[in-house]
Image 1 (cartoon, rainbow, N blue to C red):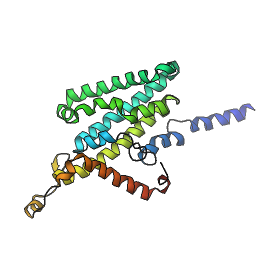
Image 2: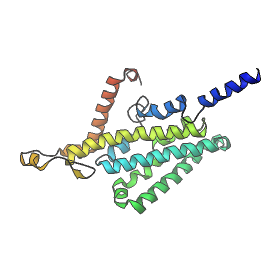
Image 3: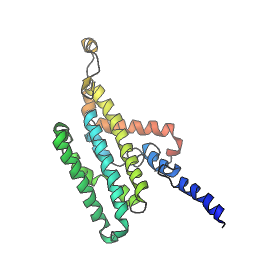
Image 4: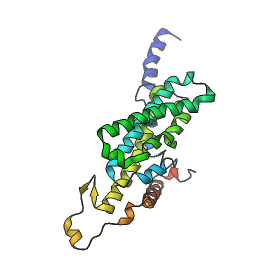
Length: 226
């Protein structure tokens, strides 16, 4: 290969492997819809049932999971070649536990009311199948930057579901969004009543089921996903 050809190929290769190359953008965007961890992979459903009564705790939980997933992916990818195969799960749990503890302490220091509402579910991020699944399936085999993007994408995909479900539950369950009253008083005067069923965990499962149905109706390539 000539020097000129080699020089011309270098920018092409750099562009292909850039920070936001087509491949990396797909890693980031796929979990938002085509490979959503909740509605396609059916992971992290338990916390989705528990923390979506109000929008604010759902947003905080989504941010927490996104940060933990992104940075645990990054850390594990950076040290993956030095992790003995027999103890890889233990190392992954230690990294995730450290990040979850940091998130939990920050919430207790600056958002104590939200921390009380989320209760044990922040701690249970450690056992969230989304976090552990991405470490094992992606970060252990990929470079740090794509692993970080994969963590961000899966965290945001999880967060989208939480926010959508929590907006519907809080709106129809208590007539508010983010604690602000949305349903006008005159509707209550006319006999409108908040739907108490929306405050129960089974309604979150029902709403996620409707979301999955709409998603598959809109995106036919997901119909045959098992």
